[in-house]
Image 1 (cartoon, rainbow, N blue to C red):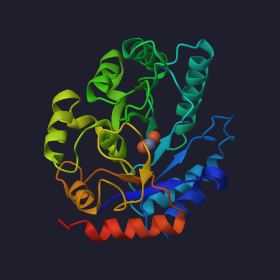
Image 2 (cartoon, rainbow, N blue to C red; image 1 turned 135 degrees about the horizontal axis):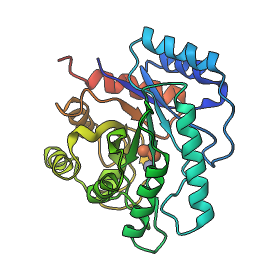
Image 3 (cartoon, helix red, strand yellow; image 1 turned 180 degrees about the horizontal axis):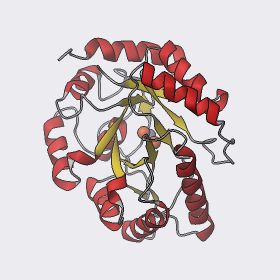
Image 4 (cartoon, rainbow, N blue to C red; image 1 turned 45 degrees about the horizontal axis):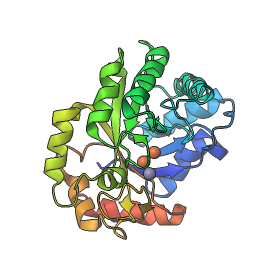
Length: 278
Ligand code: FE
Ligand code: FE
Ligand code: ZN
């Protein structure tokens, strides 16, 4: 069965997100661990997370995907910014253990002009200081569009981060279709080639989640502007190939398209209708 969901708001609690997911035909979802601007996170109510786990089990949910705040930048030259990234991720991963065995995704960050290598070293340092052998959460690096000084716009940069992390068996990659397309990987005309390249550089065993978004801009534009499925330059035909591709079809798909809940419900039903049964 296809595992598909969308981004939901955590404001009403964890169980409420599970119910909301079911209401729109989803069987997984993504949520911010805290306000995307990165304020203090609300204290977790263990009763609430336990009820979500029961609901998720009962309805065979795919893995839940927590997303770190966008403002998190462990690649920054600023000490205070790196400290914030460290404190936030450390706290988020503690909180994730209330929902054991799920996924936590973050944008690797921006080097702000000092070069990717310096940023990559700092990102790996942070992960080395935070990851623990006992954690049950898999931490995902998101493929980025390569906007400005963003790190992670190439598979090679993600490989370098993984290589710098001792406990990288706790790590994986989340592929964002809008981002890789904007970064110049042609998933419309050469999906097999892109996946082969991913396998050669990173390893397909690292691929744990897909952010499924169309793009407002042409391939290679390095813009990162998400569009509704089928209304952008990737298009529905390409998404039909993506969700049915033998190496992708068992992975969980998360929509981050510009939609309200009603729009997400429609996209989920559209994509399910394009998903082949075997
Ligand atoms: Fe993201
Ligand atoms: Fe994304
Ligand atoms: Zn994006």
